[in-house]
Image (cartoon, rainbow, N blue to C red; front, side, top):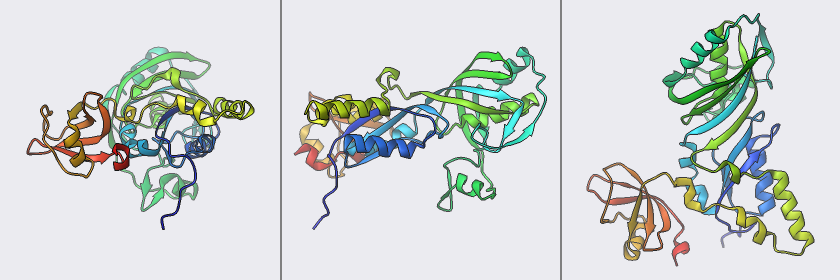
Length: 315
């Protein structure tokens, strides 16, 4: 007999404004408890120091969280010049102190060099894994693991402020970009060292900034619903974005209800209009454009499912 899962079977995405001082997983667990959700997952960790947009996926939406991991991100960061730390942020230990002798023109020229596609070597204090363990676990034990550089793209970087040995910037970057590493590299280019003192993620994909809610706001809504003897789900679930917002940027392929039966069982189908081979697409059904999953176009021009909603969703 299958074990019954604890919690409510809810589906959707919520944009949490992660507070500083706790991990992304701690944030996830707190919000999961507030919603009393059966299944939940986050879409890419923020450092404990960092605040800002952390999309959390509930239920069926967890199947599509990988697509948010692969999306562009936006950040606001404050860097302190003159000190380098072992973690490249203020949570770490200062390992080097140097005199700051930087002119604004020099700073702007160095910042300009980060624009475009470059190679970046991830920090040892990252969640990347080596032989099943996260790199930061090795780093805390004083073990350094060789890391390969990888391509990142800085679509834009704007200098907002430069005073009192502090640099404030806004960045729009590709997946896998470590802002701490950019700041550390900037400090070395300037010859004085630098580390992150403030980091806020202001955007993930095209999610609206104004839809973010704090843990405190969610808890207050839960407490008020209980005090008013209202089912908490009626209040909280209104905050959820639809499951397919996790893949809203993918091109849509609409199929018939008959074809959807085959797709939901993992079988490729033909469609009237399909993009080029290899293209990832969002699959919808009928005039209502009901979302049922994500697929790709195979070599035969068929729509092949990759991730689909649970079959019972369509029964």
